[in-house]
Length: 156
Image 1 (spheres, helix red, strand yellow):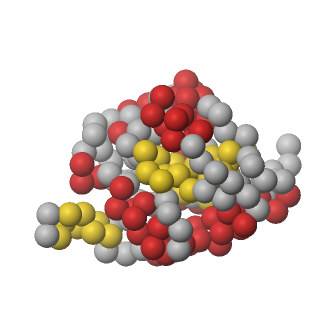
Image 2 (tube, one colour):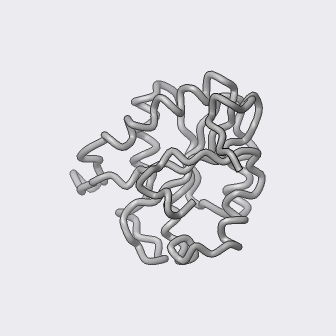
């Protein structure tokens, strides 16, 4: 089966679940988590801009660190959403869940050309276990899947 690229697909009004590598180094500074190196975020900008320009509803999924299935506040992707918004020059919605009703509702609110970053998938032990049920929950409602995370390609 041939793999397609984002250039091969009509993305207009499609929900595009996109796996990105936002496992970035962070440190606490003045009580907040701050990104020390945004190289991995910047690496996704060309793909994200292409999808946005083509009217996709972009739903981003990523991991940060190894929280081992537990919710660890210092490993939240919220600071990444803020950094991405600054780099791409448009708002990035953030959902504190990556599966379930809250994630579904956040995705449903996306407009064409909109961006949504879901919370750290590794807050769920099922992600590292490659659980097919978890994968189905994560992909539910998506029209297209894009893997823009070479470092996590073995998880796709």
